[in-house]
View 1 (cartoon, rainbow, N blue to C red):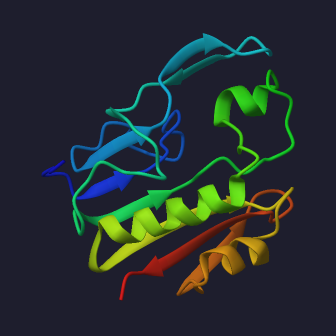
View 2 (cartoon, helix red, strand yellow; view 1 turned 135 degrees about the horizontal axis):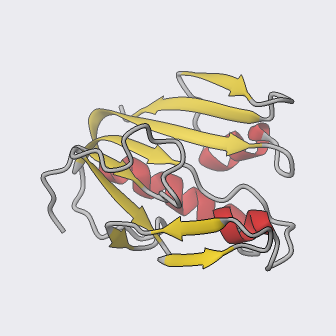
Length: 157
């Protein structure tokens, strides 16, 4: 698949991190499309531009200048928990899945393109993710009340 978009959000969910949830330079992709009332009564909307799996993206090599990769972070959640409903959850094959997703993000990046990876290490430490990916980020930042959410920047070289 070819696209004139320059940015890919590989697992957009409800686009919560975006200031402009309809940025004209971005394509928003997710494995699901849903709209429902969550277990706590809040409305959840997941409406990607493209329904696709980050483990096997339908894009040509070197299609994007920037890729955002914010996959589900939890492998121990109840299927009907608010967190699982809103953000999704990892499959039992999560280590292989996330490595394939990271590799796909790198594949679709142009040379010297940027990958922004967001990870919350409440259940799985960042060190484990970096071991799985086999690459160190250029730089990163911890955020959140307990500094458990990490934003990392990788460059395709």
